[in-house]
Length: 198
Picture 1 (cartoon, helix red, strand yellow):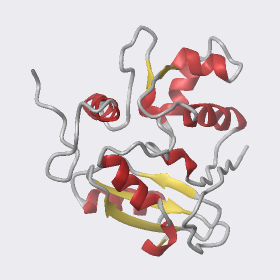
Picture 2 (tube, rainbow, N blue to C red; picture 1 turned 90 degrees about the horizontal axis):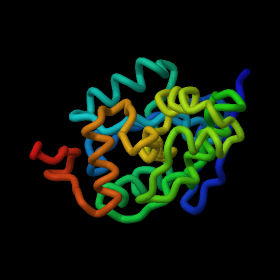
Picture 3 (tube, one colour; picture 1 turned 120 degrees about the horizontal axis):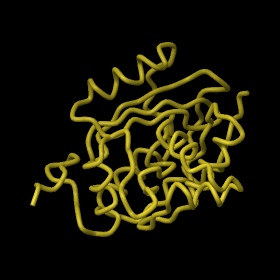
Picture 4 (cartoon, rainbow, N blue to C red; picture 1 turned 135 degrees about the horizontal axis):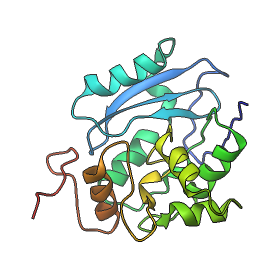
């Protein structure tokens, strides 16, 4: 079952593609190179920070080969991500999304979007929030497949007992994002740079 989820965008909306006429862009928001794909209804995909532009572009072109490059179709997304990586408290979840997900996935992602900047939740707590206690593993699978990380902050979801759990960008990036939100880390040289091992 396909189910689209949209969150209202606020301010700075740019006329964009209609329906499934997909657009993409690549940018360096200060945490590394990212690429994004959107439909006329909202953000469909966002890469995590990559070392180079080519890595980010290759990822979205592989997944969305029919999408057209159009940097002007992304409204406030790039500006919001730049502010986020500069350490500002930005509610990235305000970005409109157009996700192809099941009803359960949509409920989990919406609950994830409600986790405030600088806070965390566990997979089990998120499962209980969506009325599925005992479905922590299923919640973890939804987080692993999150098509718009950072916008829907799956990095804020931890394993029971405080362990990091998993993360598509690797555990050093997850720890770094959590530390950045806690004011303990900043990008160095304009890109994601995990803290040196102690």
